[in-house]
Image (cartoon, rainbow, N blue to C red):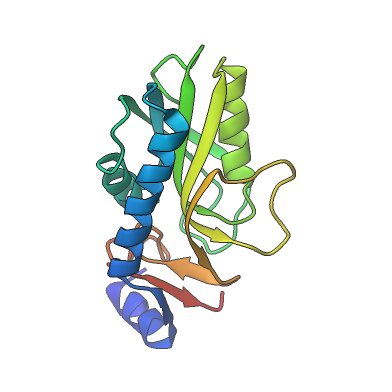
Length: 181
């Protein structure tokens, strides 16, 4: 994939949310999460790579004590459609008896997030809270999965920017864009 391809995609993309809207949503989420944690500690588990930008900004909006770790599991591997789940890294922190705040860029169909959430519970987490920057509301979400904290909604299209990629590029764009896949 080349930057020319990303440039071409941007000429056909619609900007869905600009940076100001996203920063405001992240600030709001921080307050919601603080109220839910009520001063209690949590393991802050970032889903790589997409959640990196969102998770870093969200962490600074939360005042509850956090222990940081990450997981890396993917179904996309640079494609625009998901495939079989591939675990690249599981958390090093013990999750037994903890509240886990699982942070990801997007809740689309949720198969990856459901597998990670279920893994956390299998490892003994007493509670797993799910925070996502974006959520697609389309009725195809994995059974039994719902985000506890949602920044913004996005259309049922392929979205990229602000951590989400277009063929491994564009994660650093300061807004969220949508194209037809």
